[in-house]
Image 1 (tube, one colour):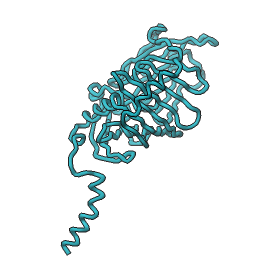
Image 2 (cartoon, one colour; image 1 turned 90 degrees about the vertical axis):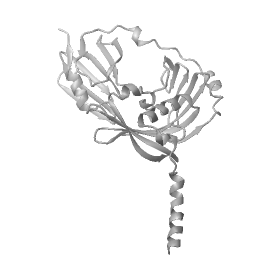
Image 3 (cartoon, one colour; image 1 turned 135 degrees about the vertical axis):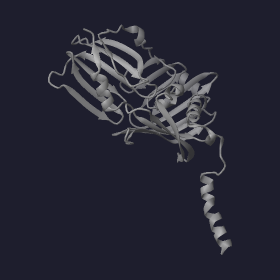
Image 4 (cartoon, one colour; image 1 turned 180 degrees about the horizontal axis):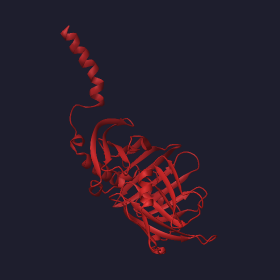
Length: 322
C-alpha cells in the first residue's frame, strides 16, 4: 500500500515539477526592484520580436514590436496587425510615424512609447519614492514562467500596476493597469515572442524607409503665457513640457502643460471659456480621465491617466494671476 501511494505521488508530481521547478533560480532571488531594473535593461539591450495585444475598455488591438540593439544603436519597429496599417520606426534617436491618412512625420526621441507600457522606461530610484514594489509569486504567460511584481502607489492619487517578467530573459510579457479598487483599466499581453540574432537585417529594412520631415521641438518653438499655475499636484508629478497655440479661425489661445511622475502622466489645457452653461464635465474611459471646468472666465481641461478625484482637485486648485 505504501509503495502504491509513493508511486502515485511521484506520478502526479512530475507535471507540477515540470511547470514550476523546485530549484530556486537567480531570478527568484532578486528583489522586486531588482527585477524591474533587469526588465528595463532587457527591454533596451536584447534583440527580440513580440506579438502582443493591448486591451482597453472598448477595444483590443494587436501589434508586432521588433527591437535590435547593435553597436550601441537601437533599431525598432512597431506595426499594427489588424485593420489599417500603422507603422512606427526607430532609428536610434529618431522616431518616424506612418499612420494611414496622416502625413508621415519624425520626432526626436530615444524610444517608441506608443502602445508600450510606460513602466518599461521608468526611473526606478525615483519611482520608489512614490510606489512600493512587491513580489507576488510565479505565474505563466505566453507559455513562459514569469515573476509577478505589484507596483503600488503610496497614496490614493494614482493608479497601480501588476507586471509579469520572464524568469529567464527578464522581458516584460504582461502588464495590468488597475484602479485603486483593483478594476482592470488597460492590459498589455504578449502572445508570442522570438529572442535571438536573426533580426540583424532589421536596420537594412528600416534604413530603406523614407525619412519624413522632422517636427520642431515644441519646447523651443513657442513661448508660454504665464497667467496661471498649479498650486497642488500629487508628489512626484513634475512639468515635462509646455506649449501655447492660437487657433487661426477663432483667435482662441490654448495653453497646455504636460506633467508626469515617470509612470503616469496628464496634460492641462487652459483656453477662453467655451462652455457657457456647464460648470464641469467628467468623462472616463479605461485609464483615461477627462475633467473640464470653467474658472476665471477660462475653460480648464485635464486629460490623463489619473483618477477623477485627483483630476478634480488639481483643476480646482489652479491659481490665476491677478
